[in-house]
View 1 (cartoon, one colour):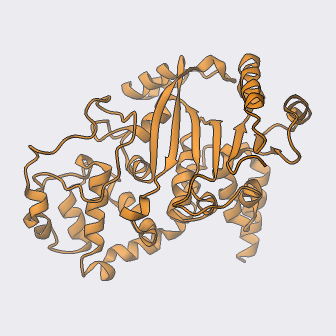
View 2 (cartoon, rainbow, N blue to C red):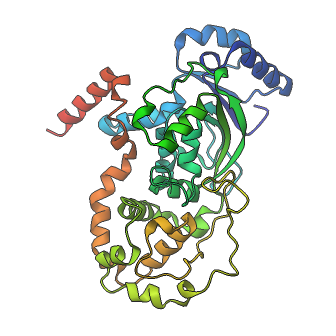
View 3 (cartoon, helix red, strand yellow):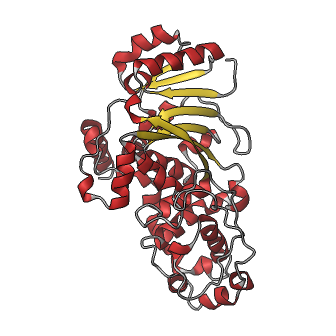
Amino acid sequence: MTSNRLHMLQRIFPRWRSAQTSLCRTILLQRNVRNLRLYETDASFEARLNATFNLPKDALRIGDFNGLWRLSYLDGFDNGQRVCGMLSGIPHRKWQEEVSFRLFSVIGTVKYLRYLMNSITQQSELFSLGRYEMFLVMSPLLFSHIASTKDAGYKLYRGGTIVFQLYFEHEFLGKVPSKHFLPWCTTGGTKKLRTLHKKLIEDGAEEWYLVRIVPRRNLFDHLLPDNLSLFASFVTQHYVSRRNRIIPSLEHWIPHCGARLILNSNYTRKSSSKKDPTSGVLPSQLLKSVPLSSNDYVDNFNIFTEFGELTPAQVLTLFNEFINWSEFHQSPFMQAVESQKHKQQRFARSLDDDESADEPGELQRAKSKKSTDTL
């Protein structure tokens, strides 16, 4: 191994046209990258990949790295080791150290990104490897789910957007013609979608986005590991609707706590000297993530302030204040967290219904085994 970093490529032959494949192969050979792992979902490409790339032993793995969320879901039914098998051999590093691997891939579903968030929240699976650097090609619609600001509509700026922007740094690197990837995407079925969604999908018919994603090195300076699950529940509970008002919502957990926020001098200051970190970019999207902060208070906080008005940093600031109140640990919020713990452990389960047909046999076997084990 000539490098401590592990490079991964996903679905090169079925995803990239021959010209792009040759270019990628040439670059890899010129750089003499040997510490390489290639994931391929179709075993019929195995012989060609080994012959073309002259790959080191065990560099090629047959499996869907983008489908880790599905494997994690199945492991939850039968206590399997599918994810561990997919990640075996990847170096483990501490969170504060350099990235343990780099991933180059194409993704087409938000479920993979949600799996990344869930692995950090639950401190499991990918989290155990340390931080990583991903260069992902995705559709404009998918990018909007992770990069939207509070000025975007409810369909785009949701709880998952807030959690993602707090957990990860992201950077828009450029556009890639969508016809360089197979199968070609169509815009069918967009009539049922809202105007903004339809526009984003239509944009994706021509060009996709290349995005760099890295977990934040300083995440635990602002959000302690023991509080990750609490924070995920806090966001889930309060972003069912962006129009939920903050004070009535928090007083549901801790009665009469609203006065503390209204009288807090940090929340009553004026915004004249505050610089908007999103200025200079698209009004509803962040092309590059902003620095993480847990000391970002909402200006002119009042009883009508809604959760949808908060930036991710302001949500984190509010959460840290909420959990430091003396009544917090005896509040009904803790009971709500416990009732949701199973759902949080398998975040992908709530997302799997529309794609379970991809693996009906294995999925049904896992469910049957789980049912048998619980009898």
